[in-house]
Length: 241
Image (cartoon, rainbow, N blue to C red; front, side, top):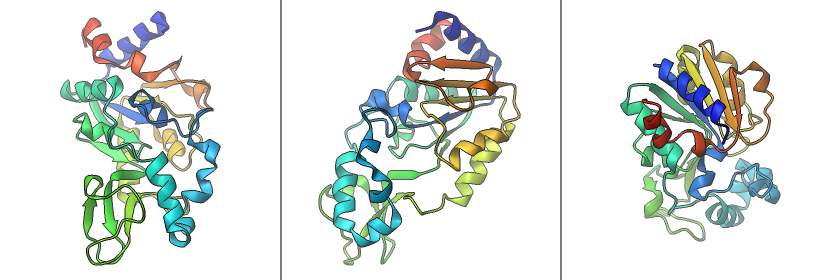
């Protein structure tokens, strides 16, 4: 961990009162959920085809075989970063979380304002009667069926599907009005989500990620490292946050 950069980050957080956290798959790696785009992540399986709307409709069983084995982690728990963001919310410093993740771990940590750009594995709906099913209500094998006989579909945004307009508008509003934007655990290559960064008009732009991003040159602070090593409650308390 870079001590100088940690001190810079803590100073920025101390000065901030309207922080938006924009997170990607790297945020959940410490919860033992693979980074989709990491060297050993799910993209080795070329999921663009599998996790698409047309594949779900035409090869539902194969979709769910992949989805349940590679994308649903019912036993995953919030890690230090998730808990740190809840801490910042309690301290009235965090405006919202904008996440590309579908694991529901921010809510599990207690965060109340979470903009889920790509939906959540927690929510599922019958395609026929629209009955809601929590992930705990579904057997994680085969094709889940509703009591009416319809196929249950996860409330996640598949390839070829558009993002929820209300979620987009709220995310852009938050990013455009916050004083500090902390981007973490994402290489910022997934669009349109990555393009939301251009709406930032605040004072401090921070990126915490393993590896470079195309936005590094626009930032006040760039940290090459694991987000949970920098954003955690112990560091906050050590620096009086």
